[in-house]
Length: 185
Image (cartoon, rainbow, N blue to C red; front, top):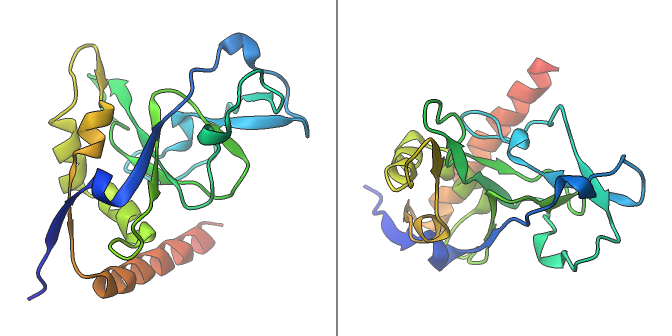
């Protein structure tokens, strides 16, 4: 029997809230723009999907946005949802490429910093597991709009097997996802 060890997300990862871009800052796509990663890129149940209505801001935006730049493999978590749906709250997507996106408000970036303790791909699948989503949603602030706080995310409990098991599980799940993607094409 494999023994699981408990961590908080903050023990394993760096967390960053998104930036509140003004709608008036949005411009047409060009080589001088960056795409804004909004919750429309997160699939129900977790995963990355292209947004049908992407928005862009100038690369020379009048604020330094380096800390909001997403890199391949970052996880982006949906931090808000409507109470009557709760379709996305807590779900994550893996960022597909470096330098394409800046992170928008009400989405958070999770970047693994302890790769000796957690496989980033394993964490992606774990973060979208029903048990983990229910755990987070139970800690959300409720109203018409439901919100996850930064502290609820950072303090979330992560149960991990040894890294060798995580690596094997992550490879199997990732390979299966790749096959599904190819079959869907």
